[in-house]
Amino acid sequence: MKSYYKLFRCNNLLFISIFLWLMDKWVAVPLLKQGLWGEQLPNVVLLLLIVSVVLIAAGGYVINDYFDVKIDRINRPDDLVVTNTISKERAMLLFQILTGVGIVFGLGLSIYLRSWLLSMIYILIPGVLWFYSSSYKRQLILGNVVVALIMALLPLMVVFANVAQMSLKYGDVVQYSPVVSELYLWIGGFSIFAFLCTWIREIVKDMQDQVGDREYECHTLPICIGDLWTKVIVTLLTLIVMALLIWINYFVIPFPHDFSTLTTRFTIFGLLIPIAGSLVLLWAAKIPSDYGTVQHLLKFIMFMGVMYSFVINQQLG
Image (cartoon, rainbow, N blue to C red):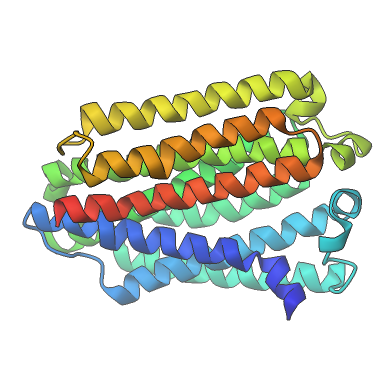
């Protein structure tokens, strides 16, 4: 059972589930209620959205490990599941089942909501995950960006589902409602944050894994330009994240900005200080385990970014 837990990355799947649920319940619903539309997605529809995404994500993790057996045998031999405890044949079967069921659920949801946009996502993403695992991840920058884009798409799927549900009830007139623009603005902010943080984390992961990646001629950023310049790029991306957080907190969101407010305190202590700490650890990192520590901190920062939805919920509620 422990092998399947590792293979499916159950911690990550739980994070994805919470992420999607909070985007709807703590961001979309308060915005819709403020615009006098009320809650739109029935719980069963939201559950189907979450389950379909989680199944496809689990399949993505399986196929990633399937193609990475040789590299993982060098980079993380203690965590190697495929070939050690689960055969490659069973891993492929699991990928097919998980991805197939996820696509069926997703397309069923898309048909119910009459959303061609969601249906395209459910058709394209599994293919992208396959090609990412088999080739994209070994190419310079492309692999990192693909994963970051998929992560950024998750919160937007909540918007697509809500807008489709509204269109079912009220017709295409909802497309011109100010609340739809608000949904894209607020949840789009989480999407940008998810994209940048995932991109940074993927680059740090490449720095951690470069021994095995170099052995199998992967063209990742640290292998192509070296650790120093890779750290410079990560630093620039991180500073962009920090600048965006400050800009959004003080110039975009319509909440009070003094230090006594929950918004400002959360931004400083929950996001900016941990992000600055990740840079300190990054520049001090020398061995794979050091980069692993940076990765864990970045995961925490992403979790805190998701929890910013609580701040919005409190301010809008």
